[in-house]
Amino acid sequence: MIVTGEENLLATFLRHQSELLQFLTYKVSCNVAADDLLQETYLRIARIPNDSEIVNKRAFVYRIADNLAVDHLRGVTRQHKRDGGTVTEEIICTSPEPDTVLSGVQQMEMLEKFIYELPLQSRTVFLLCRVEGKSYSDVAKELGISVRTVENHVYKAMKLLKCQIGSI
Image (cartoon, rainbow, N blue to C red; front, side, top):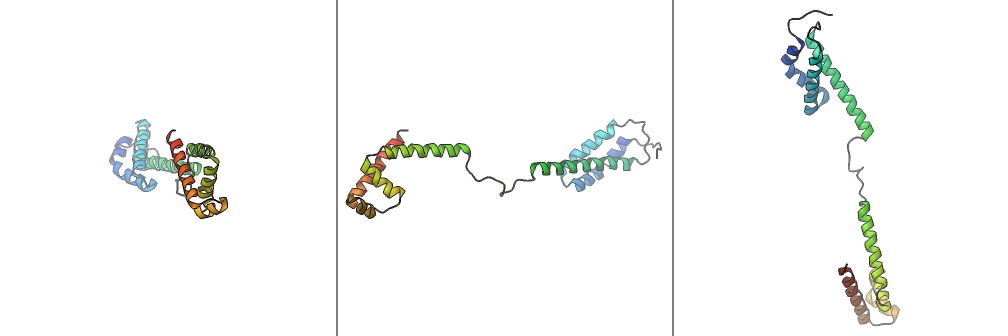
C-alpha cells in the first residue's frame, strides 16, 4: 500500500478542496461545520511528513475528512443528549422570575398594611365591595347603612390608599 507519488499530500488536498467541501457539507448538513472540518482536514494533512508514502493520496485525504466528520457528528449527538436538544415552547418556564414574585409579595403586604390602617367602617365597606365583590346595595343592607354612605366609604378608602401608595 505504500507507493511514492509525484504529487505531495497538500497538493492533492488543494486540488480536491472544493469536492471535499461538498462531501463534508453533505455529511454534516451544515456549511459552517463543513468549512471548519475542511480547515481541520488541512491542518491534519499539514502535520503529516512529506516523506510519507501513501498509495492513494486522494482516498487518504477523504478518509481524514470522513473521520473528522464522523467525530463531529458524534460530538453533536453527545451534546444533544447532554443538553436535552433544542429548547421548545414546552420546556420554557412561563412562571414569573423570582424577583418579580418577591416584588409582588412585598407590594401585596404593603397594600394589606395600608388597608388595615383605614378607619374601621371604611375598611369594612372597602373589603366587602372590592375584595368580596359584593354590590353597594348588598353591603348597605348587610351593614344597615345607605347606598350613598357605602359609596362615600369606598371613595374615601380609595382616596386614602392612593395617597399612601403615591407617597412611596
